[in-house]
Image (cartoon, rainbow, N blue to C red):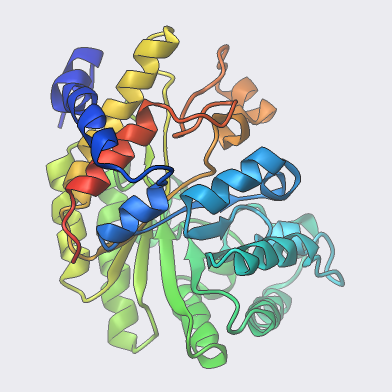
Length: 366
């Protein structure tokens, strides 16, 4: 466990990135993107996609060149789909899924059940009414996309120890209605409707080795055991990979956690990778190198686990990162534009792209 410094990051990854990137470029096929490099390593590379993926021509092209999978950023989240009880707004999700299908990309549905961002109309209901909505929502959304979605993040972020609930669970309408059994209920319901989709649980902060990260790791392993013991369908665990170098991390300890998941016969997907660069220097060139160093150090360990089969970033370009949302910038008092992703505002490759490419190139296909 350690608090990172720029020197430490460069020692653990930056120098390797600088040396390896040039060598990798010499071995790459002309015009090759991360999708092709990842495929040779037995990895599906993808990114979250939102409205801008469809409306920005240059950004749209980036997805067709660099990815083999898209995650529906916010289009399938409950509050986006259900602004009122009587409405299901599928237009945004339908458009993203159509785009992915037209371009031969896999689709990751995100997310059916999450205890955050519940609309007011849902919060106002009784437990019995919430239970009805829970089942109705899963049924209607899953049925609509049978055969069209490859992986469902059925349950997102089940844990948040700060809510001080037994087992470290996240509070919200679904936990309040069913307790922790909402997770098994959701998995079983999806499994009955769609026999072909991969069913996943997606969790955050496990990359960190502080109290929060350790609690979420323990919670996830316990939940997996409970789900498997109950016979509920579960094929993969998504770990978000929002790297936060300002907090303690220990990549070797994290890999031990991945191996614990792998021992339970599950695929592991890194689902939302980006880097919070607020703790790095203000110099863009130095900051980009530090971001790349952290990514390379992380991936060179993670990709050595054979059960890791998917790697996705949360969007592709800094221009459309969630870190640039005005509310996020204001809340975190960030006064410079974050640079957390492999492409810059002009859709050009950054050192982070080279770090990802190098880590993938070094991984032997499983």
